[in-house]
Image (tube, rainbow, N blue to C red; front, side):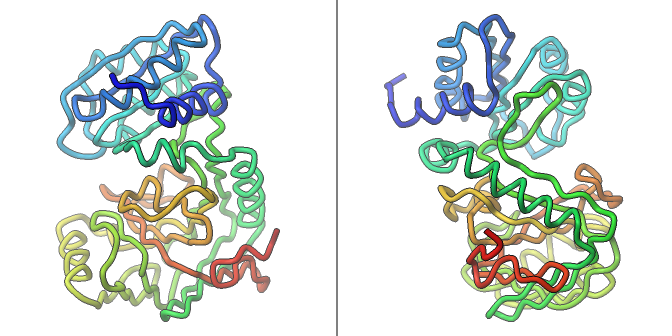
Amino acid sequence: MEYNPSLMQGAQKAVNQCMGVESGEICLIVTDDKLSSLAAYFVQASGDVQAETLVITMAPRSMHGEEPPAPIGRALLGANCAFLITSASMTHTKARGMATEAGVRIASMPGLTAEMIRGPLNADYEDIVYLSEGLADILSQATQAILVSDRGTHLTFDLSGRQAIADSGMLQQPGKWGNLPAGESYIAPVEGKASGTLVIDGMMGGIGILKEPILATVSGGRFVKISGGEEAHRLEKILSEADENAGSIAELGVGTNRQAELMGAILVDEKVFGTVHVAIGNNAFMGGAQHSKIHLDGVVLKPTLIIDGKTVIDRGEHVWL
């Protein structure tokens, strides 16, 4: 491995600050043939703190959420912490869920790139904690959110009784898990209540950075009409081949990572400071009641977010600070 100081710095921040790996802990690093060269930096960073570092390299899975081989699930249960550096996400696998229930600390890092390590992973986590927890408190206390943008978005959400989650990247407590790079606050709006118009003009999960905005008409918490260019047609096709909840509003989220930039990977793009994202599909894993085999986020640029009548974000500027 040709040593790259900027990549090692990002890996060290993840190991030392985010995960808090300690000497003598069993730190498992799961990777695949596509990302093993990047995983090597985390192996070294874990070894540098005298952790018992184990590495398992598997063949890449064919899709997000596909279960790893059974021995990996068993190995996760025997670890104190784990980094899942794989090309297809293990976040929503039973293996990850069982390990979390057993108290294993887990960082899921699907599709990791060198650019992600240098930029959003190597962020100011004190700032991310402050922003993420502050926004999560605002969202958790709210009953209504209104999302507006100059491109035509005007979407109303019911947040009554729902608790927001701060994805701050701090994974030092037993059973904590999350994505790295981190940096968002998100909530599952009440199902069936969202209504209005959503114009996605940043990126769309399953598609990438958009050439043309995707306009969705929302009624009864569902996308009832999708219009735009070729990418809008691609989204329609994805939803038509999924399930009945695939086009239902699942999440309202706010990016809190100042180092993140749009790069066509939702792991990072939903974290971009000054953006808001709205997801469709599954939200059962985040406090909602909606099951689907997909979860796709759409990023709105320069949004205005109004919570219970008070403007929190004004055209991409965080005015609540």
